[in-house]
Amino acid sequence: MVTIATGQELLSELRRHYKLVETGGDWPDFCDQRQQRRYELESGTVPVEVSSRFGLTARGLLADISISGARVITDYVPGCGEILRLAFEVNSALYVLDAEVRHVGVEGSIRYVGVRFVE
Image (tube, rainbow, N blue to C red):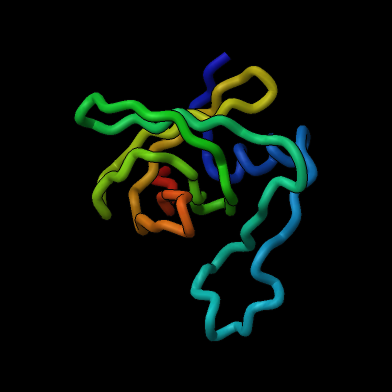
């Protein structure tokens, strides 16, 4: 089943199937510019298909999520401002959201993109 979803719907569905833990709670308020709480999966993985408007498709894994965006580990390196279609596989269902790339980064050998959901 494919569902066009909002960030809130995706986060609610993830809570139904995974244990989520809040991240960043120990950061000073002035350092955390995010408006929404961010969560990581305590166990398990959520595969993500990343598709660009140019027809490029890559696989990735959900690193963390909030109701307004997510961080996805992937080898695909889009440009900031690019709109992507993300399909999150949760309990054999796909939850599809469009998202704007806000950040591209590397931590060690892991590449990721930070996105803001476009609803």
